[in-house]
Amino acid sequence: MAAEYNKAEADFFIVALKEEARSVLWKVGSNTDPETLVKGVMEDLQALARSNDGTDTRTDEEIWIQVRERLLKAAYETRPHCIRCGECCSNGSPTLLAEDIALFRNDTLKPADIVTIRCGEPVYSNREEKADTAQAEMIKIRENAGEKTCAFYQKWDKSCSIYESRPQQCHKQECWNPEASEEFVESARLDRKILLEAVPPLWELIKRHEERCSHDEFARSMARLSATKGQTVEEVLEMLRFDYHVREFIAENFGLAPESLEFFLGRPLSAFLGLYGLKLEEEDGSFILSPVE
Ligand code: SF4
Ligand code: SF4
Image 1: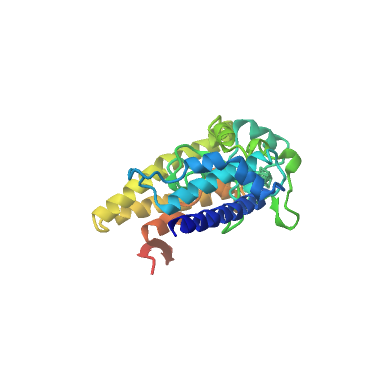
Image 2: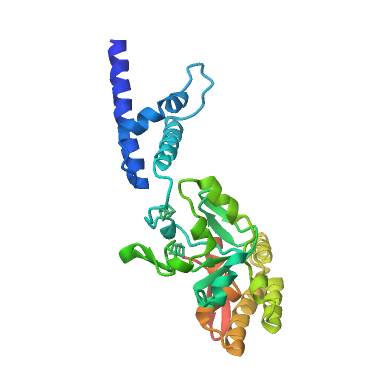
């Protein structure tokens, strides 16, 4: 009876493996037969099985995630090249590297096409799949509102409108080889200093804004606001006012399009108040902080 049960269990497991293999092969766009894929990695899959000595603390779900990851890796090995499926373009826009400066010189990119993620800014890490803070400044291609899709991605034909001049990250993206893709992102990133230091009046204002409204200082200010139960609200409002007015000032005095301000100064600080359960309202020209209902 026990042997029959074990055979049924093993048969069910093989069927489940083939189904999972079919799913990952479809995801990566490979024509490989699911049974062939499973057979090719069977030894590795068997090594992932739970040990019977009572020391294995993994849950069934954790084991299945490891099985899926191994199958996915094997599926990518059957398709080690780009098929222009557009998945990476829909999963976050590229971070620009120093060599992408050429794209501004040939007018492929303009300030309104990019945003600055300032040091210390709350971000979502695709790699870690969790909330994080930016460890250094990054310039990224703008994403469509409410999505992670790159603004240059054309959904209707799954193409890139600047494909011939796409940024370095897009050139080097290898979904089938994630380790290689991660290495270059850590190499020389483009930042505002490289792009704007040669424009002294504007660069001085940006530095002044960073001194007064850095994300680190904003986070400290919000922590003080919470610790003092609102008594330091004026300090937070002062920072929000400066952030607001400097945007108006540089737009007017340097003739900058409003859409480009998220590159010159990063996203407005008021956009991050929701993380603290607060929102900013204007009443008779004054700013008021209030809780999000
Ligand atoms: S690199 Fe991007 S576009 Fe190319 S196959 Fe991978 S996910 Fe698709
Ligand atoms: S620039 Fe082009 S290739 Fe790069 S993420 Fe955007 S749409 Fe995709």
